Amino acid sequence: MSLERVRAYPKSKGYEDRIIIPEQSNATVAEAAAVLGCEPGMIAKTLSFLQNGADGKEEKAVLILAEGLARVDNRKYKERFGCKAKMIPADRVEMHVPVTVNNCKHLFEPIDKPSYACT
Image (tube, rainbow, N blue to C red):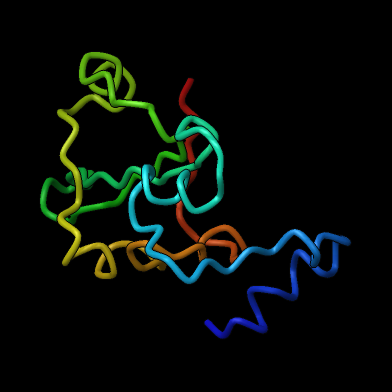
């Protein structure tokens, strides 16, 4: 995805002046908070999990958008999804979801996968 395309959506909503493109690394919550000058809890992060599909063979991805300091409660995850939380290894993310590690593409493009909101 081109930078121009990423900029187009916020611009269409009147938020073009709020786009920040840091030169320093922002790959972790701590780095992003330091670069932006905010608390880690103000950073949004995506937690990516794998689950077996209904056939027991096909794997499906579950993405949970959380605040930067959030941790997964394994008991609640299992209650909600009926299986143990298993994170997607970074080198396999692109096989399962239409995003890459450490980019914001998923914030601006619809995905054709089921979505869940967990509280």
